[in-house]
Length: 93
Image (cartoon, rainbow, N blue to C red; front, side):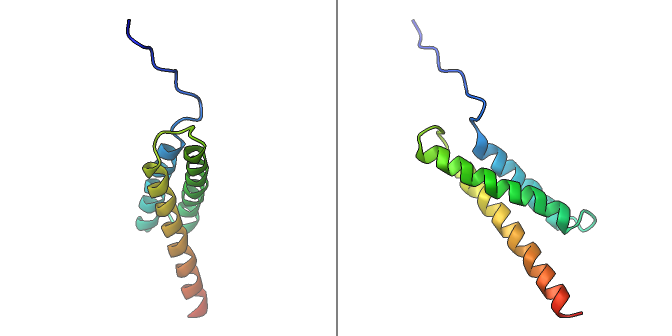
C-alpha cells in the first residue's frame, strides 16, 4: 500500500504568505499612487510572518525556510525605504 501523507496543518506555509506580502509591499512601494502608508502594512506583516516562519522552521514544524527569509527581507527593505524617504522629506522641507 502507498503511504498517505499527513494532512497539512492550518499554519503550514506561513513563509509563503510572508513572501507574497513582501512582493505586494514592493509593488505598493513602486506604484506612486498607492503611497507609503499602504506599502508599510504588508511590509510589516511580511516581516512578522517571516519571523514566525523562521521560528517554525527551527522547531521543525515547517519544511521550507527560503520563502520566509526572502519575504522578511523584502518587507524589511520596503520599511527601510519608507523610513528613509520620510526622514529625507521632513529634513529638507
